[in-house]
Image (cartoon, rainbow, N blue to C red; front, side):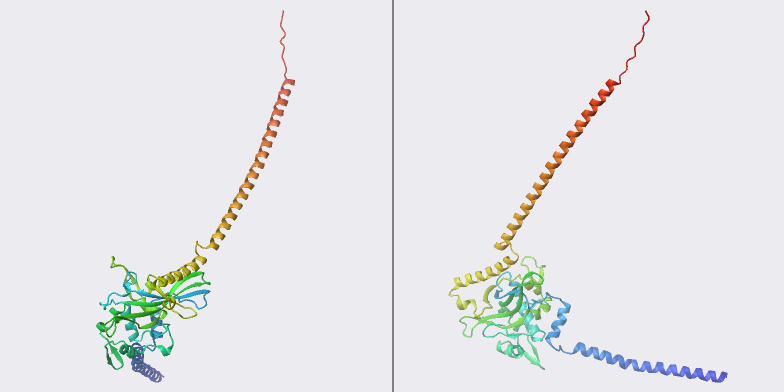
Length: 369
């Protein structure tokens, strides 16, 4: 009996040892497979710019995009001259200095790394965000005479060869809209286009070349990571490129609006004076719409306020008259009450005096003679 028990114990011990050894042998390959999978996921190239943009958006949240079903919207195209003080933050430094770079260099590198999608500038100047109009990096470099080295399908460009110093203007498309769901009136940048100015082939004049369009929603998560110096007097004052555009700190002249004819202002303005007047007229239209919704200058708002003030004044007058009437009535009642009380008091006093007189007794002392 004891022998069989000992054999059983040995058998159990052998089985346990086998299980432990098999588990120890099986774990390293499993861990190796998991490590290999993680390494592949980490080192594999980005599958698409959209995925990269989504990851950047998770790390750096940005403002909500403009809803598609807003009650009112006006699309405006502006040109931002970087020589203006408000726009100079987009230009400097002309060449990268460590981690600092200007807006064009940043967008250019994102485009070449295929982290964002860029779209060719068409002849009519309207942004075309279709797949067929996407920028092909090599064709873009060759067309703009930018020197590069190509190795295994990848491009190497020196910072000195990036024409960031020649990009001294930007076209932006902004949408001013009223969102009826949140009752807010906002202006939001929806697209950006760097513009290059360089001498023509004969050196006789400057040639303006819009380079490419990018959707602001695609680049916003990356712009949240780009830091710009925001002051000439305080070098510690910094702002992100996304905050700069979101808070509309730029200064730009209107050169086009979305209209039925698709015309830019220069097509129907005869001279510079007419162009300036047209720009001011469009700016005033935007202000008038905003004032009509929220402003104090609107005739409708003034009329409503006047009616409200008149109504409040009449209500106060009626309330005052009612209080005055109540006070007079109360005063009459109080006077009548005091008069009645006084009369009762007088009658009571006379009655008491009369009773005292009628009940008076005299004691007569008899005198002895």
